[in-house]
Image (cartoon, rainbow, N blue to C red; front, side, top):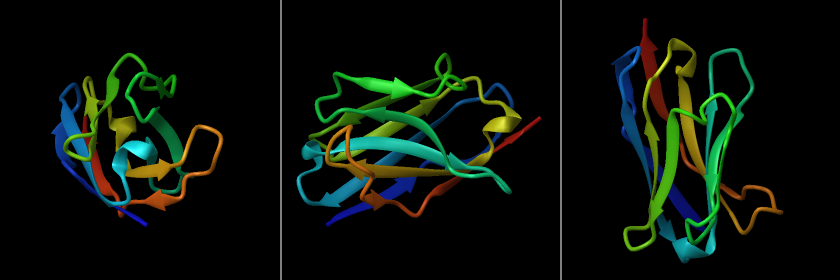
Length: 119
């Protein structure tokens, strides 16, 4: 089992920045690919970014590629999502998730943290 707890969400004006954190506990954190997803009201959950166990490989959705950065600190069992240039359309609940590798489904999910971007 892996337990995931997100933090760092909040209310920010358009153009502002936030850094989300996801703290993991349980099984060895650095064995897992970590991802960030988001779900806006009335919409399906969508992929935001993911990062390999070593941090050497990362993917980002086209909608955030130039603005968001995913990183991880295996010594702290934490994955981060640095969000710059926030837009109102980034408003959503953000979830972190863990999976064994890039070919498997995400097995573990956090409870989410709300990000609200005002115009």
